[in-house]
Amino acid sequence: MNVPSTNVTVVIEYRDSFAKAVTKNVIVLVLGISINYINAGLIQTFRKHQIFYMNPRYILFFHLVVNDIIQVTLTVTLFVVSYTVYKIHVSVCCIFILIALFTTENTPLNLACMAVECYIAVCFPLRHAHICTVRRTLVLIALIWTTSVSSVLPDLFVSLATEPLDFFHSRVFCLRETAFRNPHVIRKRDVTYTVYLVLVWFVIFYTYFRILFTAKNASRDAKKARNTILLHGFQVLLCMATYADPLLKQLLQQLFPKNYADSLFVCYIIIQVLPRSISPIIYGIRDKTFRKHLKRYLLCKVN
Image (cartoon, rainbow, N blue to C red; front, side):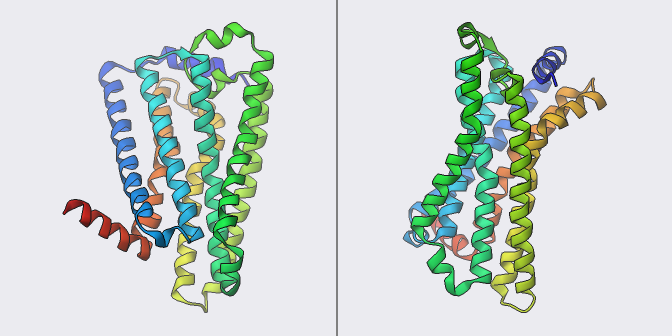
């Protein structure tokens, strides 16, 4: 599976025209700035109201939004750099790629934890306050980061051990496959993504169906939680498309060899950008408590 040479060759052969490159970069910048602006408003709302500090659900949401801001900023930066600078030093590329991978892998794990919290709130309401405490939530966030870091850092260690020192001073088109090009790293990535896919979807399906059975004869809150899990599932579906990204790129290259660059752009929007626009919908609009405080914050800001 010679991913690095394939990706770089295609990028070199099918460089966009100036007008198309400007259009793509404007679209990406507008989407990225819009998402980060909305998420920044959500963070300010969280910070200014103590009621959210003691609720594990909103703490997980806050972590998700901060994670999305970092991820969107890095991926948009890399996208623009790929058209302007084109090639950057491998050492700088490694830093960008590592942080982007940390935040990308954090998202489905965070969503799975939020689904479990909804499940506990609906199916074990009397034990929810005891099980879902602020301290345990912070420990859970630390575990999410530990899992992502443990999954990604071996790529760096393998590269440091196998690549010559000159490689890290060279310039490359910044992709995960060009920064960490060892074939063992690529195989490890495929195995890791498969495990993530199975575990996260198991949690989503299990919590959804348990809430579904509970919600049949339960309160309106239980039915709302079921719908929230569905939105989480859709968000995870988009996020998990990242795990099928290498195979998808190979398939697109075979199906649309002359429009491969455009296909990659569409994949980038769907996989990297759109999943980060769903969080504000789930909690910024649908959640009654957060919506009330968000309106109050926005009105105060306007006044």
